[in-house]
Length: 275
Image 1 (tube, rainbow, N blue to C red):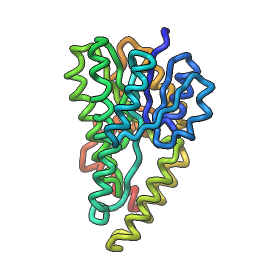
Image 2 (image 1 turned 180 degrees about the vertical axis):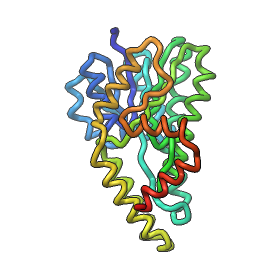
Image 3 (image 1 turned 90 degrees about the vertical axis):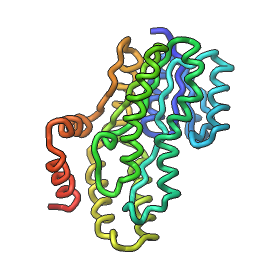
């Protein structure tokens, strides 16, 4: 397979780091973008170029894309991986934090796509992989804004796929189960911070949600397993629209298709309520 020019967001840790590492080792020309550029220094020896990139900042996105185009003349694959989990009760979560969650997980993806698409259209080819989550298929306690962002990403990807087929640009969503990363600790920090500054009415639910998160993350998918699915999508002439990674994600896909909404609600509620 010919080397492709690949731009990855959120490449400093977890799935993004593992994907950058795997694709660079495979001989691709990889640019890894992240706010914490120093965390990617170890990847320089693998033909990966670190870029300072904040997906919530227009100028940062333009500069990152310009760097790749100036140096390589094209971007074959965009992997939108940057994201985090903002958790806490809806009532207690400040709307500024809700806006930040959407800006990183959803608007940030659109911002990256808008910056890259003119070059892909001009080349009449390209591929975009948007990293969603099993959270984009279902829902869980205290994750209203996180799930909203991921469900929105699923809808955005499906809709824009219709627009871009004419230009030979392929779109897929990657839907990992709980994965090795800093995600869990960031989500738990958010839960605790929201609960500490909130009404106090949701403290019991918050602690139960934290317990469930820690239990759920004992059986995580290695980040490289997600990277393997990304590599499969890049190698494929006809990539799937969705790549669920891990047993939990595949089960969620099955459940949302074959189990009633009321039963899914009861199963989810009882699991988090400890019943």
